[in-house]
Length: 213
Length: 139
Length: 204
Image (tube, chains in turn cyan, yellow, orange):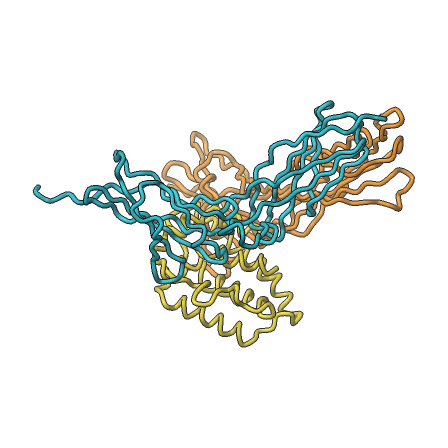
């Protein structure tokens, strides 16, 4: 028929990807479209009546948009939406599912620093910080966001290949009475019980106890 | 337990929230967020909300999906046993209802009655994480 | 068509928060009998017109056992029923005598293995699922009055308990705790081990 076909296929897989509450909207280009497709983004606070455009993500050709600043209040929930356009054709607005920063974020492993004496190792753990707008802004540790946050710590004796686990609430752990001159590898994970959130385990930090004098 | 309610809700959250197309209206969190409630009023509001979900919400949430219905049953029955525990603190008079909590709860009922019953019930069910986040934060 | 007899001897086997409904088979020569199970929680009885909810994994099954753990997920009283089907014929519902509340589940002592690794006292606990925590008691032999305890909420193979004095004997026993029903199992057998310093050996 002579009908002018003005619509473009929709962007696909529109979703928030969030790590430590750095909330970035991601999507895939409409099927079968090459370069040249542009996008615009809007977002809304769930329960509030209006959609808000994100100027920095207007007429962009990339397929992501950082909405961390707009979604930083984790007592609220959000929707975001993307529209594609190309050569005068445009798609529908395509929305995310409802995004709850508190339960839908992923948490990085803790930072692990290890020191040793002749017969002990000391482990200091630091929970990641919540995303912040600028380095000058005051840091908020995820420990403040998730009061029930705990650490699971794994200690591997490289000689015997035996691994022990510790569950601790505070951020320091001293493991005394170890074998001198032995390498131990430490990795740690963050565990939050409500809501149920676990980080992955950090990479292993290996250190040797000092040799017997 | 509350953890079991959260696990049950997490299993059906996407399904339930997808049935609620209304973005501009919330039952629990607007115009005044639960997070603004004074600590002295929390027990009373929690108690009211558990009654609200048991008496008004769950019965209007039947779906065509057997798995979702079973999870809703699990949540509803868990609400009964948690409410029983809350009732104990109510009996020991640690659950005073002040002016603010009465106003807040009226607002929630007004939000609920502002929609047709099925939409309101499904929206309320979809906002369970708002209730749970608030309860756990204020524990 | 004569009605099929309803399933009989309907009962529940519940151990460590795993709940199974069982019943006697309905036997009609030359017929393949199939069974369907439904449950009704306190909520359904009191607030939803005594409605019943089918368990899809146990709809038209030929076995006489149904795992109802997923659906018995609140500490309230549940009703359960089973009916039989053979071709176009169907029985009445057979209903569990009395209601079932998971608070009555039987809790067995945890399976554990106590390990001395140098001067370190460790315990290897069996993973019993997310509903379970463990209370682990340990003490230096001869100092039975100075028992120490550790609550283990998440089982991850070998859990570190404490460091030990050289050559000393340490004993350990544990019980499970289920927060959802606020009950504990009885304690496991006591196991003792000796710290490095002397010949490390297994003592019972």
